[in-house]
Length: 200
Image 1 (cartoon, rainbow, N blue to C red):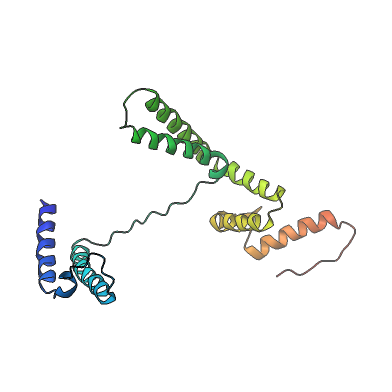
Image 2 (image 1 turned 180 degrees about the horizontal axis):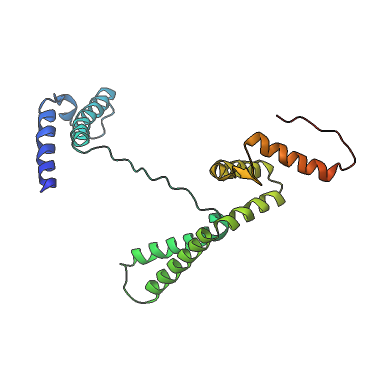
């Protein structure tokens, strides 16, 4: 019932807008099939926009602007583990769709197998998220792709920045924890040297 009401509103709004249009009859009355008059062309383009704009505005005012709040991001390891399976599943789907979507037979079996493989690869990526991230970082480091490596490290630090420990061995506070680790490693490395550095 709502769609009928929207249709009536669109009919009324667009009818009012189009009734105000003034048509230029000169290009419409032109009998030359291969007319190359620039004034005629500009006039036809203007007339087209004068018809399309009120129709667009009438429909735009009826429906609210709905934008999805979901932000999709690629799963870590997509290129290494999932992309090929996704491509095969998509090709099989398009082939199945072009052949009238059969319910049985080799094309139906093909789409089932490729879709199952794609879902399995995606589940593997999601369940082994941390391992896949670390493997990706290791591969970039081995390939000496320093820019991508440090870019991914900074992304991971931004995402996980809220999970840092606030207390270590009873010591809390950023400055105190830094001093504790400094003293610990200083004692390990320089057991003979008595020099201490002020950190905070």
